[in-house]
Structure formats: structure tokens, C-alpha cells
Length: 490
Image (cartoon, rainbow, N blue to C red; front, side, top):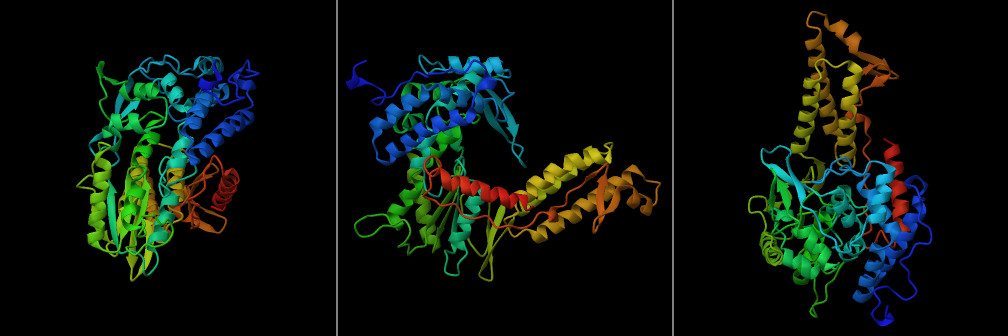
């Protein structure tokens, strides 16, 4: 190959010196370390805006055998590992996984249509479309080196579908923006109509830094529903591994579009941490976002800026869900209610979230009329633990107590239905016991039902916005260990 036209950096080789014979023999720490070295180089090249080097490193990484191993591992360990695409193929054995890694290649790649299913939206009658690519297509999507680029070019205050970022970080950032006495009083609640379904394919092909022929295969593969092949003219199919990343990259730049109007000096330079006379702050999680402002007029103007930003990408704001509210009236976001009471910001579990968990517990108990007490406890404990841990960093102590009371009432009704002719004292002695210093513990066969108030309220620390998971590994290792220790306190 002519060195002048080489697609790999000088001195790099695509040939692996040792390829493991069996899946079980793979040293995953070594594999991840080697892949991370290339990902780190991509991040540094993006920061330097050396796009030619970025492309060469991408090519090197996507053809690197260790990267292919990680791609296969990812699709065989996530939630959809037992869900096949239209070809019915699943990689469940060690041999099938190793064979897939050896055969994985983007050369002459032709994506197969996705299998379309519809799943229920929580609390809504309308169902959400979900496209299921084949295992091979999922692995190809995972293998392409797009995440390091997406992390480096992302909006600083974007938290959805990003490594080491979560809804808890979103809440912590909103607290910083709204908690002070002189903080912004007006809130623009934004929601994008059908974000995943309407992104302009031409915009993606012109602006996403990856192999255009492969990207086009992902976008134009189509889907099969009721044995009928349907084309995909816009959007990225929900269900594919690359879809959240593409959606994030489409919306990245929204923060700067707002800042260029409201956080610039006379020379047009954007200030990141100061000079914010209109108290404009932007926080986004996936396709939902919050923008703060000092007046309703500024909030309306920001909404218009965002509409223009989305127009080129084939997107538009939802008129029904995009609202401008005052902080004293409060707003719901990601399952929490943000509201100021006499000038003090309190973040509580939203009423909708409380009703959803109540309904979930009620359905389990009603369907468990014939279950043994220990079986019922096994089904309820994960629901209680998951919900309480999600809200443990909010002002949730009173909510936890209220939910414990509701739970007790539902269990009492369950016990009365099972034994209509027994006395109250008999039912109490049969199902509730004293454990340690606590009375009225719903327990059986060495299992006890967890209560919401068992969860201690622990504040979630803010993430440092300028840290990149592919470069600042020490910071994220420290933060992961710190958060893990917090959970152990529960």
C-alpha cells in the first residue's frame, strides 16, 4: 500500500499477534485496555480537530480484532441478547460468539431489515415502535468507533445515553441552576416530537463522522412488520445500539446555539462559566431538555432559537409538551418535581411517579392472590428497592413513609382476602413479626419485605462537566467507587 494514501497511522498494524482459540480464554482486561488506548487517541485527535487522523484511527479501531470481540460481548450481554432479528439467529454459545467475532467486517456490508414490534408506553394507550436488528447488525453498530467522538463533541450539559452520566447527574445540575435565591425564575420545558423517528437522513450523512456507506446501511435498512418490508425514509430505529448516539449527536450544538445569543461578549466569544445576565442555563437528557431564563419573554425567544436549530435536522418541538412555567408553580422532569416553596427549591418524587409505583405494587399483589408469602416478597422487593434507590437523592422522606403506609394497607387487604374467617390477631401473628427492634415486619421463610424508609437519603454529587471517560479514567474510577460506597450505606 502506498504510504501516502495509507488509511492507518505510520507504524500501526491491523494484524493481531495472537488470536484466542476459545471464547473462555479471552483476557477481557487486556482487550479493554488495548481498545481504550485507540479510543483515547481518537478523543485527542478530535480535540485537536485533526479530522484526517480521526478517520484513520476509526478505520484502525473498527478493523481491530479486540474491538470486534468487545462488540460481540456487548450484544451478547445486554437486555436484548436473547431477542433475535428477522434471521432468527442468537449468539448464545461460546463457539457462536467466537465465530461471529472472526467474521465481523464492514467490508461489503449489507444491513438486513429490522424486526418491528410495538411496546406499551407507561400510562398511555399509544404504543411505541421498537426495531430489532439482527445480532450481526448490532455487533457492526457496536464495533464502529463513534462513542469517543460523540463524547468529545457532546454538549457539556447533556446527560442522556452517555457513559458514566445519569438522570441523577441531570437532577444535580438543575439544582445548581435553580437553588439560589437569585436563580432564574422561568423554565422552558422542551420536548421534541418523535425525535428518533424524524431525524433527517441527509443531515446525518453530511455531519456524522463515520463511514458513510456503513451509516447509510444503518439508516436505510428498513423494517419488517406483519411480513411486509417497509422502507425507512427518516429517523434512526429505536432498538439499535447506534440510535441513541446518533440522536445525541443530532441534538448536540443546541447548548451553543442558545449561548451564542445569550452568553457572548461584544466580540461574540461565548462565556462558559460567567457573564450570564439573563440567567440562561441549559440541561438536556436524551430528547427532553430544560432551559432557565430570567423572564418569560427570554424563554419564548429561546424556544424560537431551538425551533430554528431543529428545523435543519428535520425535527420540531412538541406544542403540547413544550411549556413555559414559573419555578414557584414547579415542573416535572425525569420523575421528579422541581418547585420553590417560599424561595427554597425542593426536588421531590413527582405525583405521577408515586402513582406509577403504587399501581405497580398493587398489580403484583392483586395477581399474587394465590402466591405464598415468601414468593410475594421476592416479587415486591426488587420493585421497592429500584424505586427507592432512584429517588434516594431527592427530598423523599415523607414520600417513602406515605408509600410504606399504602403498602401496608394493600398487604392487609391481601391477608384478609386469604383468610376471611380468621381474626385480625391471627392474621397479624401469621404474616407480621418482630425482627430486631422493628415490629410489623412482613416476613416468611427467612425473607423480609423491604420498606421504602429503609433507604437513607444521600445527596448525589455533581459530575465534572469537562471530564471525558476515555481520557480522564482516574476521575471516573474514583467517582464510580465513591457512588458504590454510597449505595452500600443503604
